[in-house]
Image (cartoon, rainbow, N blue to C red; front, side, top):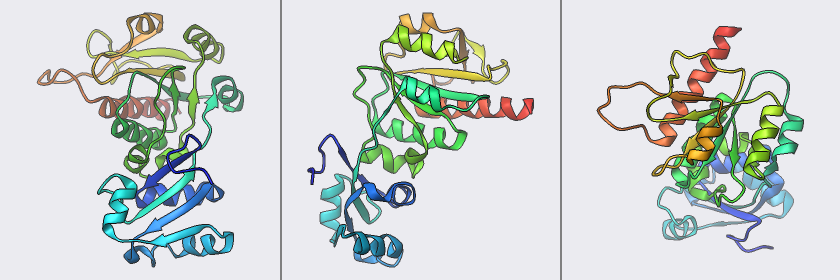
Length: 250
């Protein structure tokens, strides 16, 4: 068995994160740790572990905190096989016709922001596109914040930037740079049926070259009392607006 933390495994914690894996791909579960108080709530999972001979241990609070590297473990930790990221061509090939939305995360690195972005993406049916050299991948912290949403969101690894842009445009996508100021008001602007929302890092924003390559620029209006929204909060606004635009069109 691979060690927890090996490249093919991820250690998840949080009830919804673990339950979502059990619901969608139970065979990926390799080891389970839980607090005694969680035994009644996790009976189906425990019975499955017994039937499949997957090891589980009832452990104390200190052990759970150490295993999860967090006090927010919610009484359960699991070592799970990491789901492979899709190549862009593979994702586009399986994508149904019609409306679609994806998020291009250019430099986003905070796992809690990723988790919140995955939760919003699951709610609004978006995929997440990761640049070729981005180290970003699902972590225990991100999965917990996503509250099970990570299992519902395709995570797609891009190739060379110019090739990725060409492939996306060939599939009917427009690229929209999300900018703090100077873009069209996202709450009023018409949005393309198929759109890639390009989101920059928490500190530096997206690369100027990528922003220049986009087809349109979108901004979120506000009072100006703060410079901008956190990238995860901004993502939720953009996705809600995209979802609303489709509802109006139908």
